[in-house]
Length: 191
Image (cartoon, rainbow, N blue to C red; front, side, top):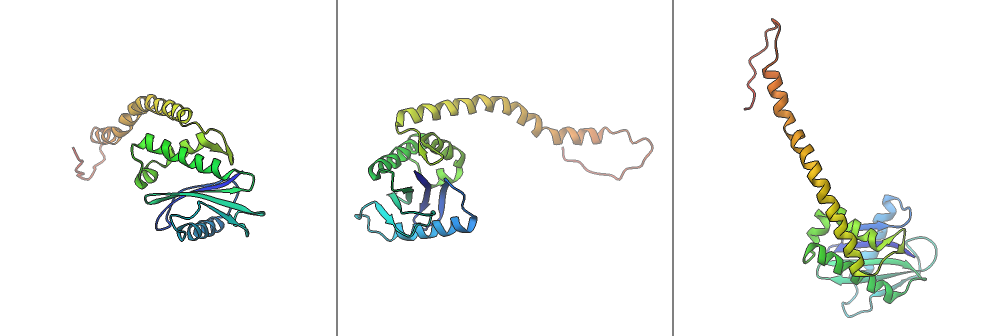
């Protein structure tokens, strides 16, 4: 079972965090710090699997399975029941899907499109269980989600234009207000 999925940059700043279990904020920060130190100090030619005896993620032994792409580390924390090569393949599928969606994914895409990244991740795994490993199936679901968002965007665009014109309508209403003999101070309204 997958216990956590972490993506952080070369400086250790988390760019994506998904824990499949309850951990306090302090525990999460400690886990991120420790995992970054274990992964970042390894040579690029070293194995991508790290056995963790004293588990940061609860009882039992766990493995850290990671890949380092350019400026980002993709780390999956799993228990001993998961296949190392299967998780490496899953990381590859995740990165390829991100690359296809964002056309050459970079760190800023993860920061500014966190909702899309989480949607992609939910297509791949949920609750610590792997749901889909086919890049094509994941892209089909992501494209369907994008179409749905665009169709909702047309509806919300009408609402947004009505909301954005609300301040102008309020100013017009105040300008046209019948004072009923009450003397109002001379207020200059933007035009």
